Image (cartoon, rainbow, N blue to C red; front, side):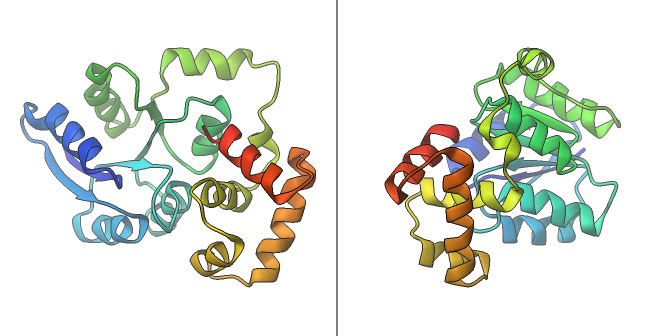
Length: 202
């Protein structure tokens, strides 16, 4: 099994490698951001990709869509600190075959990858229950992938100019997106929007 891990935290990558080290026949590749993750996918043709949502530059959601644009049969597992069912739902919508929370039982990591690699899907039981029985929709459910990416960058400390540069769009486009986000999240000011970004993405 050839595994590509895309995560910008070296400790997380080392931990994943340690969990897979004892399994015979596993070959591991790693990348620290979305662009190098896509390059590694093209170079190594992994059987399964483990992708963090919050990557520098290209987000995990965008990376998943780019990988699937190249290979519609690619098997992707999103690996995230966030246990919000809306994130898991967004990951599935983006084409991921599985979703693993970073505080899940580490012993489930390898079985999850094997199940996805064998053509199945994987969701932690608790998260699957939350998705099935959620009564109150998450604010994220009404946001586009681009809007979630803007929130992520705001929460990371970027201003609108930085975000425009990173996403390759004009400052005015980002300003308009932020105005729409304020309306959707009930934020009256830019500071309220920043607080909302940190709150919904915590």
